[in-house]
Structure formats: structure tokens, C-alpha cells
Length: 501
Image 1 (cartoon, rainbow, N blue to C red):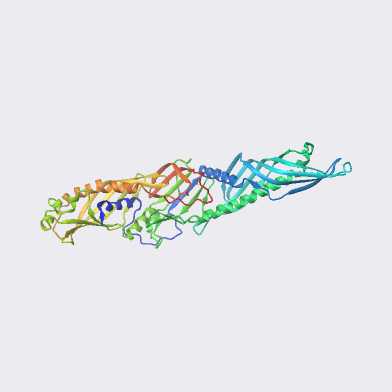
Image 2 (cartoon, rainbow, N blue to C red):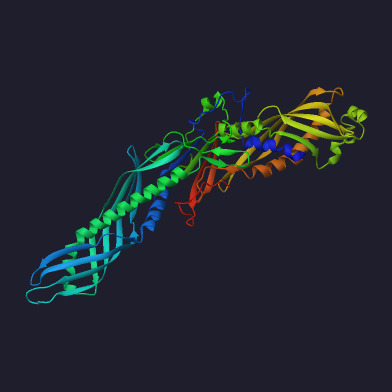
């Protein structure tokens, strides 16, 4: 048994569901269709690039170069000098400038004007005809690498519904090295530079390149570990598997995902109507927004079909705020023959939808229509007797809003039409019944529906990222969310899950 408020959850579901035609979803949807598109603009790419650069630096340092470098050189008056540097460690990296560029070959990220600070141990020894014994010295040294340029090109493609990241090209170039010795003979300073500058530069280039390769492998593993479904509640999930390869332009990248609601047990059908009007491309009026998410009506439609087919849109209402309305005495002036035949008997309202709720998304607003049958039951001596059935057509308009990373909204009642479907107690005066039903919908159903709508459902956003200053745009059959994003530095990109709350 449920309160009357539960009946009006169906109004909520229309705004978390979408239009269904009269044939009710005849054809089976396929997994290679996209109904949600995500566009990352140049500003969004720059934001992600800066984030990745910072994450890369924090994961690289401190970085100890694996090799011990040895070299011998002949120095006038001294003879052969054997020099060794070891424990070479990069402890600081500063990136002066970086950029990301999209092209047919992939995604290029370049960091230029980069400086790199290192420490190392140094040691030298020599002997000559002047000094018959071996002389040695050692100490610590600081090294500054300047003008370093690091670049990589990434390939991104769909692999069985997940994103696969591949490193196509990578490189690191060192322009200049400055070495400052701590301790030892200062007169050997230039000799150390001449002896080890090239080898230190090569070691730095190799170490950073290898570290970047390791980082790309981890990022690829993370992308492929992202779940293909986001739980919405105990009965439904969002299919967020990727469809086709990302589309790269000169200033943006677009990802297409399936985006439909699913119960995980059976495939939900989608009518031909949606395939014909489907336009997954994202358009934001404010081109400076980092992110755009476009939801086709079919996304909401799949939720409507799922909950309808699962028989979640049937209710027995036996409690209302004005309980007198669920006793025949409360209807004696509205339906006199009901009271006459069943005086002072309790009543139930058996409510069910005759078809999935219908939503229309236009450039101006969202319009919702719910078709329901209300069977009036009388409870007499513990026996339930159905006496009449009234068909309802509930129409409303709604608005949507962003709450964190969820898309929610509210609804208001515009119209309520009623007709008598059948009756065992004679003709009913519908004009007398309609004000009662309108009051119940307006004062009980709508507030409850809005409390449900306010929670919304999750947008496909990776945990750690939060929408900011979001704007919502209505267009023909689509809702588009255009937003900037922020990132919580407390989250580790190697471990972040999909946000599902």
C-alpha cells in the first residue's frame, strides 16, 4: 500500500524520462548508438593539460637516474683524470609554457622553456709524473638544466566501449646544463662541465621519456577501468559505454556515449523516431565554457520505458492528507450514488499508467504528459469492489537545474483532463470530480514530485571534477549542459572512480 504522494512520483519520472510514441518502443536499440555527447573545448583541453602536467611533475619527482656515469679525460700538467658522478636525482621541474594541439595524427602536448634541477655526487682521481701518489676528491654538486622541451603525441580510440590511450610519439630535448660543485677544487669546474654535460643531458632525456611512457600506460589503464554503467538506484543504471572513436577538431574533442538507462538484465528498445531526430553534437552559446554535455530525449525515454516495463508505475493509494476523501461519505455530494450504495465505506484509488510518460523538449521549455487510469475501489467487509475507472491526462511544464554533478529540476501543473472509462454505479459528473483531483495533484503530488526531482540523476562526470557556473540550453529534443569545471587536488587521477552520487 502507498500514500497518494507515491502516485505523483510518475510525474517525476516523466522529467527523468522522455517521450515515447504510441507504438511504445518497437525496435531494439543497439549498443553502437549514441544518445549523449560530451564536448571538451579548447579551454577545457587547456585545463586538463595543466592538470596532467602538474600530475606528471608530482609523479616524476624525485627521480633518480639509474646509471653511474664515468669518464676519463687528459688534463694538461695533471695527466689522466678519472671522473665519476652518481646518485643523480631530479628534485624539481618547472614548466614555463605548455600547449595542447589536436590534429589528424592525435593529441599533441608540448612543454617548453622547462627547467630541471638535480643533485649528484661527484668524485675524481688522478696521478701524474709530478705526484707519484693518487690524488682524489669528491663532494656534492647541483645541476640546472635549462631550455628543456618535452613533447608527446597521444592516440585516443574506442575499444569495446572504453577509451584506449596510446603513446604515438614522445621526446625530451635538453638545451643547456649548468653544474655547480660543492667542495673540491674549483679549478676543475670547467673540466667537469666539458666531461659530463652531454651525458647528463642524455640521462635526463632518457629518464623523463621513460617516466612519461610509464605514466601514459597508467593513464590508459585508468581509462579502460572506468565502469560502463553508473548506478542510478536499485533498479536502473546509466549506460556510459563509449560509441565510435572520439571526434577531434582543431579546437575541441567530442566523445559519444550510449547514455541510455538500463536495468542490466535486458536491452531497452528505442523507437525509430529518436533515431531520425538524433543530433548528438554539442553546441554551447558561450564558447569559453570548458565542457558541454548534450542529452537526447531518448535518454529520458529509456528511463520511462524501464520503469514502466518494470511495473513501477502502479500504485494502490489508501492514505491522503484529507483522509475523508477515502471514505464514501466524503464523496456523497460529488458522487451521490456511490455513497448511497456504499455508505461510509472506505475507499482505495488503484492507479496505473496506460503508457509510458511522455516528454517534449523544445527550444522554450519541457512539456510533460502522463496518461493514467484511476480505478475507484470500495472496501466493504474486507472485500475490494471496483466501481468505476477514470482516465486522467496530466499535463505540466518543467525546468531543470544543476545540483553538483546531478541534473534535476521541478515541475508545475498546467492542465488536468478527465474522462469516464467505465462505471458500475452509473454516470459520473466529471466536472464535480475534477476540482478534487486537481487539488490533490497540486497540493500533494507536485510538492512530492519536486522533492524527488530535486535529487536528479548523475551526469557522466569523473569523480574529482565538479561542474561550475553551468548553463542549460534547450533545443529541439535535447537538453545541453554547458559548464566550466574544477578539480579537487585531494583526488588522485590514478585512483578516481566514476561519480555516482
